[in-house]
Length: 229
Image (cartoon, rainbow, N blue to C red):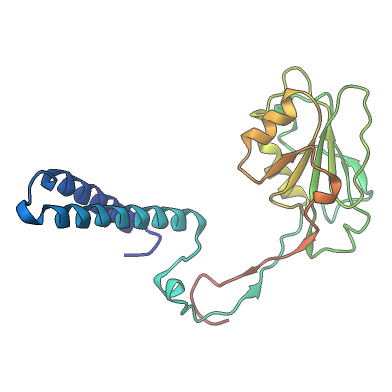
């Protein structure tokens, strides 16, 4: 039974429910041992609730992917993961260009977004860069953020936050961009709705440029086979 598997989580849930039901059933019973049995039952239920919650969080976040990792006995060393190049990396001839991914028509924009790259994007093929997503009004010009990949687009009345949810994946396929910490710039309901529709921590609305995450090298990881590398 694995540490992050559903069987273990289901077992703790069942044990919690059973312990709670037994405590409720025995509450008016127990005779002279009633105070002791009540205290023991409540403590057992609390322990099981905490254990179940911990297993659920660990399953989602993968803090301890195995029993060996929980004991601290992984038998592995951290290695640098290889950073996947963006599909446009080898085809770009300018640091500023119109971006036409396959998903473009579904976004209902006035035209293709404009992408402006940091000056050192090509010189640092081993890093990902922060993203500034700028939503402008027609005729409005946005300023490029030099240290970030800046994507400027002009929505129409039919552009929705739900439609733009494919944009981060499309950009991550084409360029080396950060998977979180995006800065979404713009006024009106659409930028706020886009930020609210994304997972917590993915994007921030109109954050100061100085708060952008830095360009990062490929992360360290532990091999999934649990063997030394």
